[in-house]
Image (cartoon, rainbow, N blue to C red; front, side, top):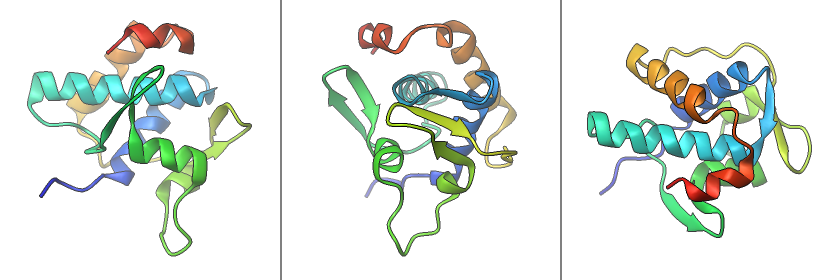
Amino acid sequence: MYPRFKQARTTQLACEFLRLAGGRMSYMKLIKLLYLVDRRSLLEQGVPVTYDRYVSMSHGPVLSETLDLINYGSGPSEESCWETHVDEDSRYEVSLKGDCPVDELSDAELDLARAVYAEFGKMVPRCFRWVG
């Protein structure tokens, strides 16, 4: 049995990226940055940050459950920290709703997120198809 998806950790990681980007970015860019952190964490620490499932899509790998949260939200009976902190501004962008804690993430994970953002944060989403 695989570990379950960690929605709170994923939300806090997404919020950190949104903070670094000034509060808003394309959902494609966000989903790619989240994937890159998970991948780098697996390589460096031996464990992912989000525990999401990876799916190969036409523009490269994505985090499956995170993409579902962006596209469809959580189920009606689920309490969603994602929907509390991340807003879908339009069909292609997401934004930070307000302050979001980072208590689920370690300092090392936050440093990793900042390093990934420093390396890839200025790229436009279409460039991410070559990353993977």
